[in-house]
Length: 165
Image (cartoon, rainbow, N blue to C red; front, top):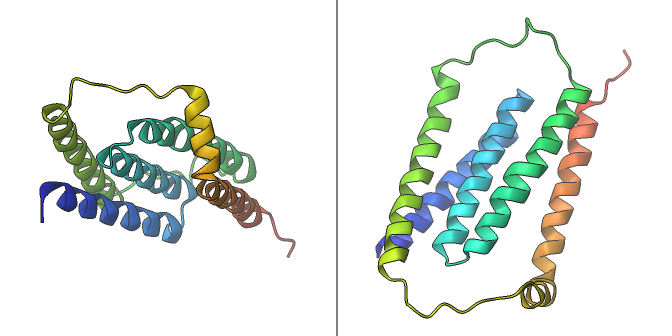
């Protein structure tokens, strides 16, 4: 087993564990933090698989913009009070710190390996070629991801809906 495989499985474990924590967490803001951690682990996996543009899209679009949207929806549907917001204990900090450390170490090692093995010939991929490849070759994956985001927003709306007693 080489170093790339070890990093891949380590990042995959972090991604799956953070996703499970995001699903099982009762506090919605903590769940969003775990989901962002999962997105960063997925971005690191894409970078490890020599797809830095997709990794960048993952961070900018999903971990950035979509999570801001989710946070906005949660704040609109569940404003809460200041008394509910207690400082999280070590039990909540430890998994997030551990996951972040694994992701940062993996990205550092991957970056060093890629820089060492980088070739002088760099082929450019234009926006037109990228969009054609993205929506022809990977069209199903794009649609599945968009459906996942739709289900997540509908689920957040359903969970945040106030029920009449």
